[in-house]
Length: 181
Image (cartoon, rainbow, N blue to C red):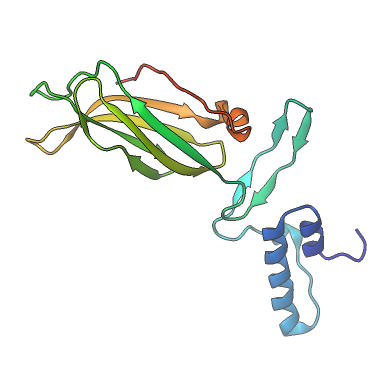
């Protein structure tokens, strides 16, 4: 649009972080010369920004166009409650199960407390900040007190994109799955 800066246009389209960055760049360039020209092909996102892919809203057939997301933009809180496991088998030779679950999502790690027995109950909640495209990995481990090593009982990878609509709608999702080991 005529008469508007690129910062104004970014702000108009709801990308405040980009608008603020462009405004700072314009002000910095004006300090030196009194005039400014930002070359759009030369622009690259600041560190920490990620590129969001096109998203298709199947309910309305709208396509949300690609755009850059600033740090913290587009994240939502995912609360995961690990309730229980059933019929776990020991991963070591002492035949007792001292299980805990390690949850991993985009490099962030959370763990449940260790519980003894083949049918442990945790009722343990953890939170992650997600965009909805991540994979949440559940790894069930058996603590070995003699060696200090954790034995693998099983693993489950959950693609959050398969549940993103329901998550954004605030729905509770219950997963009952057999583990891969």
